[in-house]
Amino acid sequence: MAKARKVPAIIDNPMSFCPGCGHGIVIRLIAECLEELEQDQNLIFALGVGCSSLLGGGLVTDRLHCPHGRASAVATGMKRVQPENTIVAYQGDGDAYSIGIAETINAAYRNENFTMVAINNTNYGMTGGQMSWTTMPGQVTTTSPLGRDCEITGNPLKFPELVASQFDVAFAARGAVTSPKNINKLKKYIKNGLEAQINGEGYSVIEVLSPCPTNWKLSPLNSMKRIEEELIPYYPLGVFKERKEN
Amino acid sequence: MDVITVKEERCKECGLCIAHCPNEALSFSDRLNSAGYKPVQVDDAKCIKCGICYTMCPDGVYEISHNGESGGED
Image (cartoon, rainbow over all chains, first blue to last red):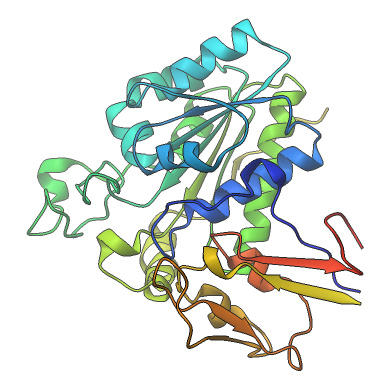
C-alpha cells in the first residue's frame, strides 16, 4: 500500500517562489521532519533576507525576519533565551555565506545549539542574480557578466566542509533536490540536524544545492540537470561531520 | 482505496512532477488557473499513487490519502 502524503499544516499554504524553485521542496522537508519529531508547534524560524524571506508568507509558526546575513546571530540569541524551543536558521547562500559570513562562522565556531539550513543556488536570487561566494567559476551573473574570474574573486566557498574540518560542530552535510532519491537523503540529513539540536549536541548545518531557474535562465528541468552535471562535482553531497554516538 | 488530490491553484507548471513520474500518469491540462499556469492533471488509470509527484513538487500541489484519510504512515 502506498504511503499517505500530505503537506505539513505549518506550511500548507501557497508560496510565492518562482516555478521550479527548490525552496518549496526544502521547507516541506523541514516541516515534515519537525512534525515527525513533534517539534512543529515548538519552533522558531530565524529567516534570512532574500528568497528565504518569502517563506514568511506561507509559514504558520513563530518566525523572525533577521537583519541581512545575521540569522545565525539571531538564532543564537533565540536558543540561549528559549533553550526549550527548536530553532532553525533558514538562509540562502548570499545571506549566510557572503553578507553574514562572520555571524555564520562565529555561530559554528561556538558550536551554538541550533540548526542552520542554507540554500545554495550559487547567486543572490531575489535581487536579480548577482555573484555570491558560491557562484561557480565562469558562471555569468549580473555582477560577473564575463563569467566569474576566480583569479580576482577567490574560489567558491564550501561551508559544510569548512566547519566540519575546522570546528567542533555536531553535524554538517550537503544535500540536493534534484531527484526523489536525493530528496529522501536530504530529509535524513535535516532530521539528523534537528535531532542533534534536540539532544543538545550543538551546531548542525545542512547545505542544499537548489535550482534558481529564473536567474540561471534555464528551465526547471535543465536547472536540475545543471546541479547534477556542474555543481555536484564541485560541491559533493554527503555527510562531512557525523554525529557522535549518543 | 488511495486517492490523489491535485490543488490546481498552486501549480506553477514547472513540470518536475511530470519528468519524474514513473508511470507517465501526469500531464499539463488545457485549462488555466488564476495565476495563468496550465495545472497538472492525473490519468487515474495510470497513477499508482507512489507519491513521487508529492516528493518533487515544490508547491504542495499533491496530496495522497487512504480512504479519505490523509497523512501518516501506511
